[in-house]
Length: 266
Image (cartoon, rainbow, N blue to C red; front, side, top):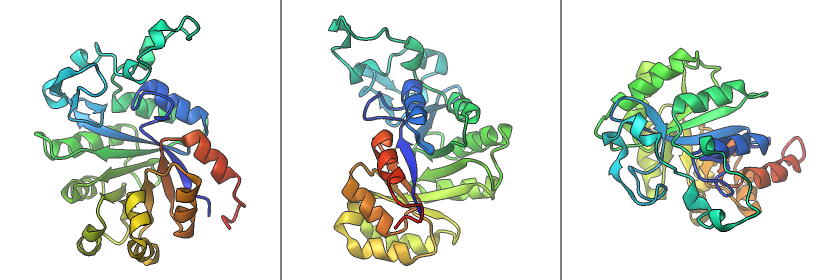
């Protein structure tokens, strides 16, 4: 079986992460799915941002996402950091500023829904946060608006926070969930806590460094979504484990590698 290719924060190797431009580029590159992180603004909007603040991607702009309103976030450029010398390049293409702002989850869902083929969304809720379970409640409300709260919806909700995924299961029992974890020693406890139909999301580094973990996961009943897979060697390991999806910064490269595999994945 060929694994799904999921673009990590969009086509984030070539574009600024979590921007509309990055996600459109990922779709154009042939990604099967788009991965995003979401945080809740002070006025209740879910936005696609990884960090608690924007200092890394918005020229050291101070302030937590949770204390800012969407209108303020829309004034910021969160893409120029990726190409800091672009304005000095006389041959650089004209910049489309609409591709450079903070993106709402609603807008990303609209983009995925309008795509010419099925695009999966893998949505990671970030914790801890001052809003606690309100993040998942807002998310499920939005999924319901789109009719994406059923078993056939093109969406998976992911989190490192076990309680966050429990909330999603209570609010939308049919939505697929992925328990993320970053250390091999966490798995013995997690495997007793998660539902049989939950997916699991280990990092590629842990699978590489801990072969025993890799094979225990492969032998478990859980589908596996692995982050962040960027090389042929990492893909080969994922294939050997029967991984369902590889989350990658390089969707175009990974698409080519996966498409070169025989249809049966051998």
